[in-house]
Image (tube, rainbow, N blue to C red; front, side, top):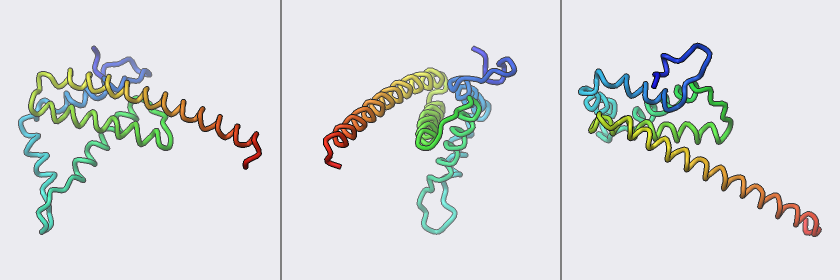
Length: 146
């Protein structure tokens, strides 16, 4: 499979290609990533509580860049749900890469497939719910209740 950087000009990479390429960027520094993540989460104040915001910003930035790279046109709630989904999948794959680098790409592929299945199911439920809502609204209007 070609990496996201090797595609023909004018064609957009797939989400799978973008996230796989991003995992490839980690490979040369994989031994140092746990320490880097620990330093990011280390508090700078006196409360000594781990700060999850740097990790969340990292995941959010990766997800936003990946969605931009694939030409995602999501709007409103879809924009947020897409990025949360991509951030979750990538973060899980990146953490898996730290403990098992040889299976990280297979793990990423599996997560992307499951994420797509869940997303399709939610879209179908949303569509069905909108039909039910419109039907009930029509019934209520025609009965003269409202």
